Length: 183
Image (cartoon, rainbow, N blue to C red; front, side):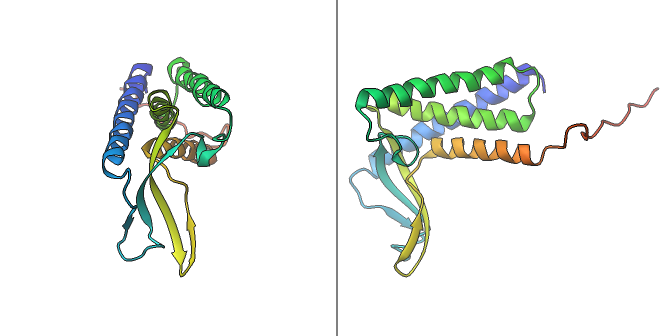
């Protein structure tokens, strides 16, 4: 894949995911804020599989760093995240060759980081979350943290990178393209 095609692909995916993330957060604010959670499938509560519920998070993953002083948290979650996003973006731009899978994974990670960074910068340091999943039997249940589309993009990109690494051909064992026939 040429660098130009790779960048067009990455920017297209990023724009689509950031727009989807911000649009779903706006919908969550207008439809879920101040209301009881909406559970699916109906009738399984409190052990529903999927739940829409409004929440905001001043911290990172699972509210990590949310108890830090506001200025330290802002530096860490806006400043450090921005540096990391620039580094990931630089890899996309600077590398001469990246596979479709790696390009996709990095674009997903970037779009998720940008989506949550937009929230932190324009929503008073808070990220809007609105989805929750869980399983349960009787009174026992196990639930995820509350998350958003940006979080899904970041996790999806990281999982894709791990899978690509796990299933990559061993060094020196790459499949060779068939020799071109001479005419």
